[in-house]
Figure 1 (cartoon, rainbow, N blue to C red):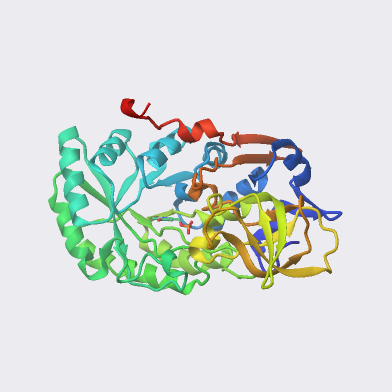
Figure 2: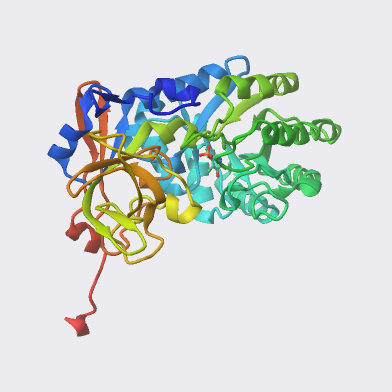
Length: 429
Ligand SMILES: *Cc1c(COP(=O)(O)O)cnc(C)c1O
């Protein structure tokens, strides 16, 4: 097994056989030979296993799993889990359309975000989604106005900021008191009073999402207890809550983190949720997609300076920004293991003109040479989704493996794709 301490990884289909890395039943080397590097590589069975494990863990409560599309919105990947019954948490019109294209019924779609535009609210109302997760009073009022214009009632849940520190990277904490998201906990009842006073709003639920890559159970339980504590007051106001949406945020193993298993998480929150009699929505992103994908890159140069040894690879921070953006750790291993005993301390860096363009710093990795393939693990979530054309680099291919076969589920971009929306004024021609 590649990863210790990660019970979820037992379902992981990236394994070494005779020192060669396989994705399901095909060697990564073989795929790289055919598609070129760099590329993202996903395992169909790993993805499906993760979704099913999540769904099953919460079988004691009536629930809908609404996978967070922002983690990875590739059409084929979304369709794999949509076909198995998974819903969608979307944060833009693009993601809403992607969820519909993936085959998610509108009744399993929730719409999150703190800056939904009038156009987005209108399109989602026309679609007839399950709920708008409303972030603020002005959004409530705008939604009411648009729903009135369309002669519809807008189903809503209010996003409540429970002021809980989830103990994660500060960029990944979303439920702190000073965070931009949701209704401040002590203003929540006012929010609900406003919601029920608006003619075209139908109150359906409450929502929280306290952050991402959370490795403890306590922040979830504390936040959920705060939410549940509001139910009696809401009842007194004559407001019934049908859905409790507990957001996403469960962490995964990148290195040696030991996040709670899904069973542990379910044991901690299910009794609380069950007692409310409400239906439950989950919005997992990373835990479904993160370890279902890797990025494969080739060593371009090995460079020695007086200070360091640099392994320069053909992928850059534009392809996988998490190390630069969140100081994130991603396991890096050679696709063909040769001399595992001989490890050297290196920086693994990309070709981008930024010092922050790195995948590992001062890391002991196998001694690699020019032309070797490296696998960067746990890249399925917030990998391709956050990639860009920075430095005029075409976005890389996405490949899906199922059993012995592989499929290109997103073509590698070419130069022409990058310029396709540009126009030159006549006076410059
Ligand atoms: C990002 C996000 C999620 C998914 O978070 P993960 O950490 O990937 O599980 C769920 N809900 C909301 C509102 C989000 O912003």
